[in-house]
Amino acid sequence: MENTPENPNSTPLQSFKVGDDEYFTIVPQKFLNRKAYQTPNPKIITSFMPGNIPDVFVMIGDVVVEGQKLCTLEAMKMKNVIYSPCSGTVKSINVEPGKMVPKNFVLIEIE
Amino acid sequence: MQNALQGGGAKAIEKQVAMGKMTARDRIISLLDTNSFHEYDLFVEHAAKDFDMDKKYLAGDGVITGTGTISGHPVCIFAQDFTVAGGSLGLMHARKITKIMDHAMSLKIPLIGINDSGGARIQEGVNSLAGYGEIFYRNTQASGVIPQISVILGPCAGGAVYSPALTDFVFVVDKISKMFITGPEVIKSVLGEEISMEELGGARVHSEITGNAHFFAESEAECFDQIKKLMTYIPWNNTKKADPYPKKAPRTKEFKISEIMPTDPREPYDVRKVIMAITDDSNFFEIQEMFAANIVIGFGRINGQTVGFVANQPMVLAGVLDVDSSDKAARFIRYCNAFNVPLVTLVDLPGYLPGIDQEHAGVIRHGAKILYSYSEATVPKITVILRKAYGGGYIAMCSRHLKADFVFTWPTAEIAVMGPEGAANIIFRSEILNAENPDQVRKEKIEEYKQKFANPYVAAAHGYIDAVIEPDETRKFIAHALEISVQKSEKSPEKKHGLPPF
Image 1 (tube, one colour):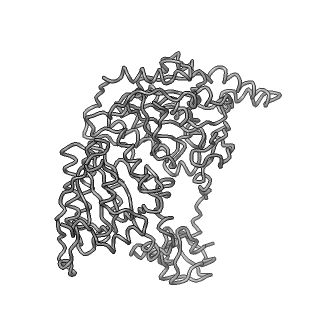
Image 2 (tube, chains in turn orange, cyan):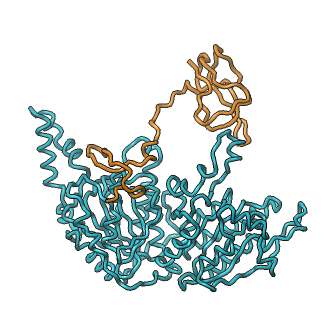
Image 3 (spheres, rainbow over the protein chains, first blue to last red):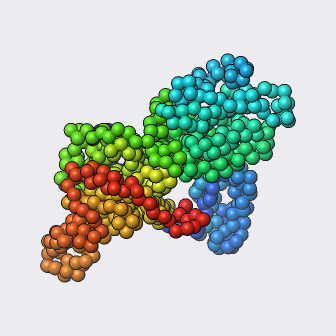
């Protein structure tokens, strides 16, 4: 007897809980690939979309205030300025001018 | 005349064939009934004047249009010809397409579009954008009036993807179909991300991940067979019903419900076998088989009449409703309602899928689509509850409360706010916590709850269920319900249009 709609006899049934009830069923890859939720940390500045970093305005150890320019992210023919969401000291910089970054890449950390 | 019939010429055709693709004219001929194709606008010439385009001849301006029949059904058809300027869409190319679309609308017959095009013809500038816009407008006007079928047999990129996206059914073929808004080269230059065309928007991606495609085939020939089969299940337009076929009994030796269903309610089974135990000759024509497989949708016939099936699939993710499965089912329910196809819903689900990713992906908004579609549907609605129907899932799966015409359940059905374990933990919370042996008491209370609510009779006592039936009687009850519902006519309140949670 086939045990999966897509691939007969290939996907084993797994335990799968909905609330307090347990079921045995196929758990598709798309479900397993979902990413765990992370609480956003405003001190970690990430790229909100993939693109190029034309300028970085700060250096490690710089004291920055909320609203200060940190770097620019160029994507979709638009230069977006990234401002510091908080005041603090620049702890690390993971980009240099001219670098391409994917989405959600950690650009700068502040402490 | 000969020039026009040769498309892009021998060399271009050779290239097309080398890619494993048929020519546009061959595609039309293989899809339509023998000798039924009648071509129009063969001598239309392109309107591009700039960039030395006026010196070029483009056969039929890169698209073949006409009418014909499929199994005797009249259809309007167009096929983009990749051998002519890459099937690029210019003003006259678009005008040929919109003309055949206008024919389809005034004749009230289905429209089939075969897409194989590099995209907009850059040399024609804004005129090619205008062409796309004119097509989208007509797709939208025709939506729900005539069946619209899109066949992706080559690239379909940028603005071109939105015409198929607006149509009812999209067919793709492995390794041939490619659909995306921006291709790998643009993505790389703008964003620095590398991906192949196949991984970005190949036939599998759209069949498994995005849900853009409804039918997946290994070859163009298989794809055309699928289209021919689909045409037998759907009506010519929204004023008609699908053609009736001779009645046939299901193949009950292979598909007997009492043998398909496991005795343990936690054991899964393939709900498609239950559908096949109900349909004529046990034929079930599944749609979007690989996308959101936790819900099953498709066509079958009961006593010769087309029926749309929506069924939870306990085999995948326990059959839960989630963002994708709600979206998939809702669109199909609306299709059936628009084209007078009665709906049969088979219910066996533990509810909506819990999880942060689901909540953040908008399971409220997407989940609401299924409620909206069922509530809005005025075709005959018949629901059979097979095993579990918990919580919001019970309401959503075409319950009596969403105006199902008939609701049947099997004696094994459990209709409750939630599963027995969860419910007992809440209702008997203090008794369990204060007991000397909480585990023992919890077990007893779960059992008590099961006895009381894990059956169809509480719901039946309120009249929410019309009949508790034996599983092997399911087809008989559905067939009778369909038979007496043929005259059903229900009017929705007058409105311009509703606001489904898009």
